[in-house]
Length: 310
Image (cartoon, rainbow, N blue to C red; front, side, top):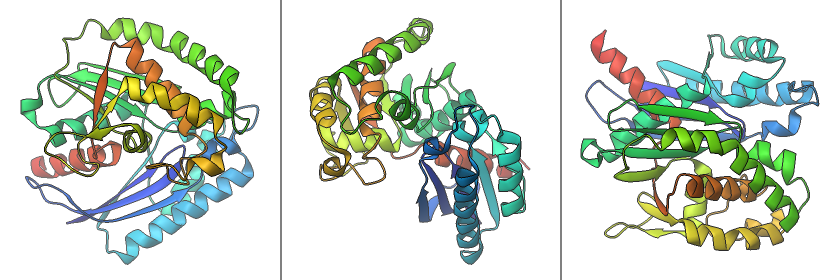
């Protein structure tokens, strides 16, 4: 069966098309992304502007047309923090559903963490034991921990790379003072979360699963022994820390010349690096592994599982 997962996030509208069947590993056939950076369109009262809604709907229509052209049988459409938290979210959801011609599933922050954790668990396997997960999107940071397919602890914090860039690092380049202000804010926001996660068993694997983390691993990390490419990269906290001052001194136009930093991430990669480093330090993590599977794969896997039981 050909399935599609449409992930309407804070940074991109991303359609993943895959062939799947119960009991089998989904095989991706295409990936279509439209970069929006929705946080640019958030008004002072927390709404998505008319311009932002129009851009969002246009991206959704493009994804819908690709899904139809690729004979997608079932389109799983989800939205995350930017749509979820907009003060005019009801209007935005109605516009999206009108463009799609079907309902939209709006995920809560902990739901995002659970779906992503499922994908990471399936990628690493049962033998991975206790997993601690970090996932940074445009609007929020998700954390999850556990030894099963569903985490025993899950949290979502509004520390996404796009959100933090708009709020703290609007200047280009942002400079050291702005970076330290963001770091202090992240430390304060993460303190109660870190305390709650200290009750979890020591992780056998600490995993990062977002595009921002994969970009940072290509920049500052190294391949795991026996692996090449980006599927099993490792990112040490010390190496990440050494890159933050350099990233903050470079204008956005120069950052995309660095390894792993794509044009769609260049504006918010500094904020992503600061938040990730702060979170790793708050939870006592020295190094993390990178998973190529994340939220979209988790949504897909959960749907395939429901097919098997229907």
